[in-house]
Image (cartoon, rainbow over all chains, first blue to last red; front, side, top):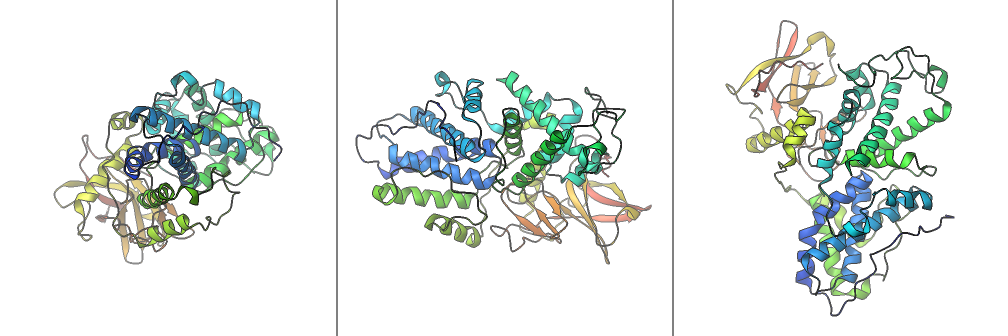
Length: 186
Length: 302
């Protein structure tokens, strides 16, 4: 793939490991964080297969880089930073996003600005519902059927008394509008 | 319905092969025809969403443009919105825990850097961890349950009553187990609600219904009507009806149920069966015995 690597600050370089990781603190790190990391990644990829894959990558990186001396809070912040860069790399490679457009995204706050990286992201479901509540009724309706209630395109079309093609247009526009709302949410 | 974007007037059938026949849902007169590249965009996003609904890695496609990216990001975010959807599968967590412990014990056993994501394939990689995960998913019978009612519920309820209701329904379902013969709503605890005209459901068909307090499916067989809860017994996600395989499929963790509500063999683990809901036929209508809600339960769902 003829892709440049974006000039994004990658802060997932291994921390200096002064001593071998002890298994107990590793287990604690895992138990304390894996669900939140998974939810975060899931909200960036939207499917289980990729979420499991990327979550595994994040924690395998953690095993190699964990420093016992780090306090809990900074480990958590660091894990989320690793998750962010792992997701960004994935999007870049898998969806072949042009490197410079990804830079724009980063500048737009797709990933938290560097000075906020120690702040944990809020829960994705709450964010989705917040955005949803601000959309025009028709957009909210189509996204509710398609994403919250898992209706097929056919079922959605029947409920909304539209053609299936109309639903395809409407879901595109609704997501586009949602993205605009999210920007103003940030 | 009130709308801020004038999207109420939808007309004209649509042929996907021709943008000429593509009516614009926001254009009351149907005069604006989207350009071919717009149609391509709609179809492409739709295919992507359908992959996500199957919880699969989407098929590779052309590069996303700057305009596409925010839209696709939103699709991923909204996939995480239903109750329980973004919760990891307990079997996955167990498998990854083992893998991490093994890597910590023998740091040299794993390569020093994480490789790029493998190329898309329908086959999972045959690593020991993946095999272990597959095995655990098959063998595991006891499903971890967690209450997922949280601070976000009030906000969720305000946005979509039905999705929030799924939490409640799930809690009732949990309380009912293990007596699979006990109806979800016990006698005296609810009220009858008409949800469909008898004639609207042919023999062999399955229809979704909602009341103020329940989400479920009505099924018509030669023996008459039967109703089942439409909320997954695992983590309260709302099930979809899969006409091709005739199963109820869960969008969250791959759970599937047979037409009569049993955990299908293709489920990752054996789930509790879908609770049944009492039905009756009266005045040409199919009625379900629904739990009483905060308001009167007279919502009719088509």
